[in-house]
Length: 263
Length: 280
Image (cartoon, rainbow over all chains, first blue to last red; front, side):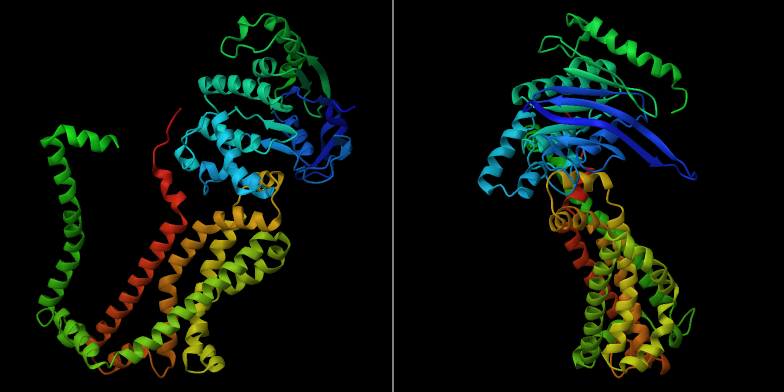
């Protein structure tokens, strides 16, 4: 029981449709669990409500049906024990990189001395040492993303929720970031829920890939990925067993792309 | 850093370039001043030749009048009165605008109730209120402060309102998940996000506060630059009118300078966005 960090239990979500009396059913009876130290990727066609699941885990949205349990406690309000890495880096433009990373510690009442130490080590971990005094606008997209990850790692959240964090990056930066994320999460033993629409990314990073269907979204499969770590992010096909794992996910996902004419 | 080492080693070429950048600034200033000087010269020449001097005066006469006004001390009571009205009207208007704009920006419920009213009042030409304010607050500085502050209020109010509402919902959620309480959210997110809008409103409001004060003084007053200009124009004294206007320009210039200083301090991050990004 102690190993279960996060549990989605029969989650259903309706959203009001503009100009219609009926609500749109977005999520329908989705259940899966996330164990401690595991990396779970959630994959699904666009508009299927993947991000909605993360918002529920963070307590920003309460599901219409079902519940999210975090360490056996039902999530009913803002969940400050999670870390959230959004699609855009969302650093505070009016704060320097160091001030950005320091902010969650400040909110949590960490003493000044410890704050300084932890900010320095978090920035070093993501390879941004020497950029402490830069403002976000002075950093490249990849560096901002690293800053965003450092700002989450710094307060050692119980679970890290990532919402297509590398979607907006160019292909090269993205591979580097994926590789760095793998080593960071392995080192920290972090529990991660990672939303993406990229099958390769999901297979390379995750211990489990959860495949969602078109709207109204149901859980199609929860596929364990048993590739040895560390995995090679730069040449996916060189990982022994990659093809079979990709195939397993793709078999489930393919049907969704065929239907998916309307986005 | 690289610039300096390059200059040191490159000798004469670097020196020449440095000289040319040194010369560039005065040259720019000269170019900036040129149209102004040309205008003054034309005014000086045309006055009495193309147009009667009694209509437009001339720069030398205006300068002469300014000197007399300050030398005799005649202008100081007017300066003091108008200065007080401007500063108080501006400060009250800005404070009200920031507080009101922030409150309505943060609370959609309040905004739904009060927005139509604020819109309606915004549409009123505030200058039309001048006679009413004289009745309410008397011919002293109170009525002028009221008029200036209400003009400033709406400008600042709308900018702050828009600024607070423009804060990305995702950023707010993210800050809450990081563990912020409402006070911290205000201090670390809403106020800095609204700061560029506040500054814009404050800059726009400077000339409006002057208009408010001067119109108030035109309408009815015992002392002030507006009264001085009004009296000068009704006694066919264009040099006096222009002297008054020059002094008002001085007020606006000082206020703009101070606002610029404040802006540079508050919005350091904003002005830095022009600097090129550094890639990994």
